[in-house]
Length: 242
Image (cartoon, one colour):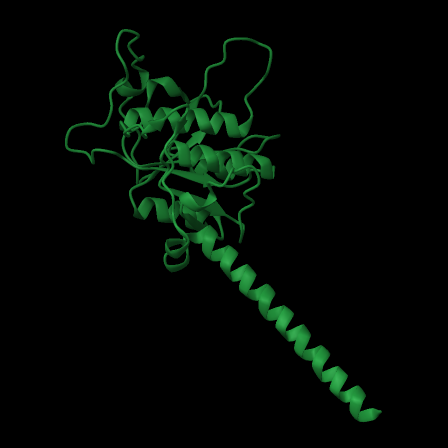
């Protein structure tokens, strides 16, 4: 659903099919050379999907991960990539939407919607936040209302009604990276070269996930010290009573 902040594209643009003889156009001349993508996580239920989506977000150049309605993101299955995508937390979808509007970011719903366009047409126009629905029931009315436009992934058999949430998100993020012409990461042998953050950098300039983990460990150490102090006091009192 388009809103006042992001007017709908002209009807001719929406109805024009992608040419099969040429690749979809990338960013227009005069735009930022590499538009940014964002991953907006809300209403996704399975923690395994969170981790897989984070891993794909890192692989396909996502700039930030927006987390709605959670204080900490479950990162099971991310294969050590959680520290590479900065996270921004929002209490509600409305506040996340307002932040996107203020920053000129359009929200794209990944959903088989009547207005959705095939992802291979690359109907993107600039910085975009991608949001997926719930594994079981899809997008809620609230989520649909927050979206400026929708894309879907064409399937070529009737063997399954839809794709797994993490797989669908990964495919769409890859398409955006192709459209935005993000440079391919260097390869070494059969893998891609990793951008390593050393311990000093993680300590002095932690991302949201790293900071959350540091705070958790500090709290655990403080609780342990407090418990040890209580034990010492109790022992001292017992000695006095004796």
